[in-house]
Length: 449
Image 1: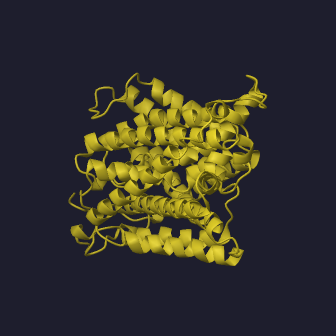
Image 2: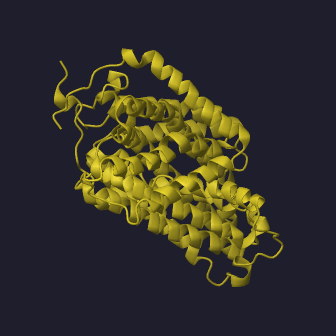
Image 3: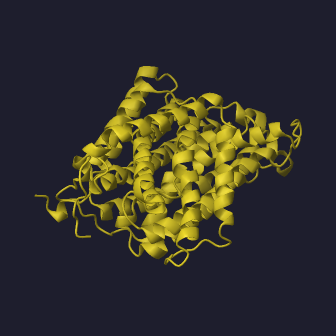
C-alpha cells in the first residue's frame, strides 16, 4: 500500500523564487550563443526583429500558459493542461505524446546546455580536447543532479542567488559598452539587402527560432505548479515579470555588442561575449566574464532539470506513466526517480551529441504537440465552457492565442525540411506506442492533496 505522503509535494516557492526559476531557465548559455546566430540570416540592426518577435511570442504564449497555470496549478505543466483542455481519449493521447516528447526533449535540452558550457569553456582552456569537453559536459549534468537532490525551499533560495548572478552579469555586459558604443553602427543596415518578400520571412523565422530558444523557460513555473504559493496569482505574475526583464536585457545586450563590434565580426565569432569584454577591457577581464557566463549556463541547467523532473512524476501519479516515477524522496519531498532518470539520459546525450542543429531540433520537436495544441485547446475551452471560472483571463481573447499559434507555425514551416519531418515522425511513433501500451499502464495514485 502506498502512503499518500510518499507522493505529496510542498508549496514552498514564493513569487520571487518562481520568477527567478523562470529567468534562469530562460537565460543559460542560449543568448550568449544566439547573439551571433541571429545574425546569420538577418544582418545588421535587422537582427533586433528576431528578438522582438521572440518577445511577442513569449508574451502571447505566456497568456495561454497563464490561463492554464492559474486554473490547474499542478505538477507537470503541459501534461496536465493537455488532458484538461481536450479531455477523454484525445486528452490522454495528447498528454502521452507530450510525455513521449519530454523523455527525449528534456534531456536533450539539458545536454545542449552542458555541451554549450563545454564549448564556451574552450575560450578559457583553448587546448582542451574533444574528449575532455565531453567529460566536462557529463560532469556538469552530474553536478546539477547533486544540487537538485534537496528540499524545494532550499532550491528556491539557490534559484534566487543564481538569478542575481545572471542579472548582474548581463547588466555588466550592457554597461561596459559606455564609451565604446557607436549608435550608427548598432542601428545600421548598411551592407544588408533586405526586401519584404517570402525569402525575408524565411530568414526572419530561422533567426527568430534562435532567439526563441533563448526565451524558452518563461513557463517553467507551470511545471512546478504544485509547489508554488498562491499559484492563481503568482504563476502568471512570475511569467510576465520574467519575460519583461529578460526581453529588456536581451535587446540591450544585442545592441551593446553590435554597437561595439561590427555585426559581421559578431556573426563569425564563437565566443563573441568573451571577445567583447576582451576588446573593451583586456584578456584577464574577459576570462572573468567568461566564468560568469559559464555560471549562468549552470544556473539554467539547474532550473531546467528542476522543472522537467516534475512531468514524468505527474504522469505516473495519474496512472499515465510507469508508477515508479511517482515516488517522492522520503526526506526532501521531491520526485527523485524522475530527476535521476532525466538527468541520467541528459548525461548520456551530453556525451553523444554536438551543439550544431540541436537548438533547431529542440524547438521544432515541441511546436505542434505542446505550443500549438495548447493555444487551440484554450480557445476550445473558452468556446465549450464559457462560464467556467478562470483565475486569469487573457486580454483581447482570442487574439493572443491566435498570434502565438501563427508565430509558432512560422518557426516550424521556415525550418529545414529534415527537422519538420523529424518532428512529424516522432509524433507518429509516439502515437503508435501509445495504442500499444495504453492498457498496460497503472492506475491513479492517491495523494490526499
